[in-house]
Image (tube, rainbow, N blue to C red; front, side, top):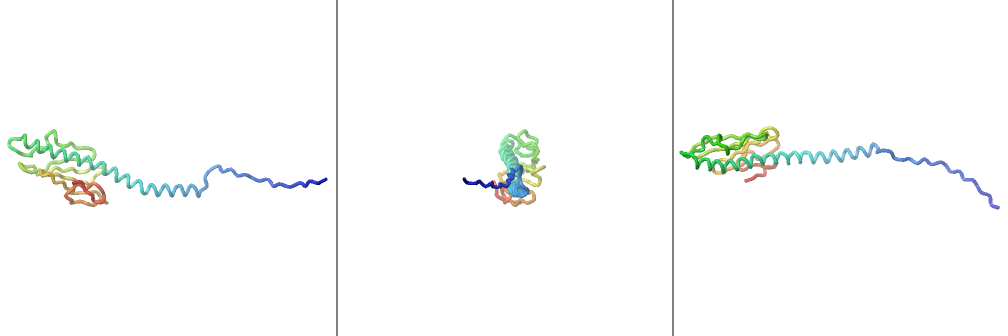
Length: 156
């Protein structure tokens, strides 16, 4: 008969992972920080550009309205157009002003306030669009167009 040997089996401890290791948490934090470092400035720039379109729309409409206002005045003048109902009202992002209003010329200015402070856009009686001011970090001030991107790209 064969004798059986008793094998000694060492008890094995099975470790169940109950959480994340510090290294895993740190790697996840680094990945999130990198993504946030790219996404937050891009999102902020996108929100600023969307706010600028408010001024572009208001100035374009005001330009057309000024011509209508002029044709309804006797004698023909752009003076007091800022008191007309078609003149753009101030908003949370921009204030609007009429300057240099005469019988044949005017300039409407949109000046940024709050989150778009520093931006200044104008349009005149000939429809010439200019950017006279941009916020820090943007280029294109003094352009004969409305700056829409921080790189200085324009809307003509």
